Image (cartoon, rainbow, N blue to C red):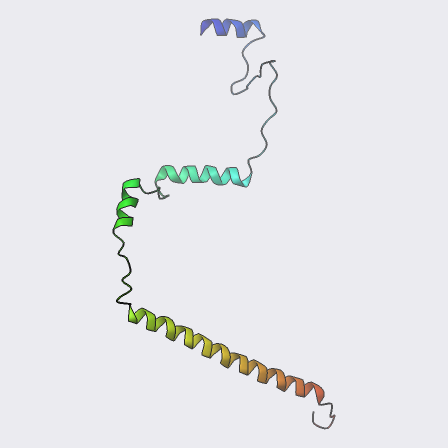
Length: 122
């Protein structure tokens, strides 16, 4: 350590704190302002230190979670779910057809009004 200080002193004194020198003794250019990605990464590192970001589950936990899932029994379908799915689909189709018919009627009404050029009606 003392030898390094002596070499530094022989080269013109100690350099300012935090200043880096390259191999040729030149100071590298200052870094640009950090971009949004750098700032977001720094923020995520800080949040992870506080424990607010959920960590990936351990391998043992994922294995046990996958083995506890029951396989669907095709011999006994879930009739409530099947009924809800089909009734929801039928209701959406009925609403779509009703809305389409109303839109067609509105189009025909406006088309007829556009064609009517009588000055005595208005």
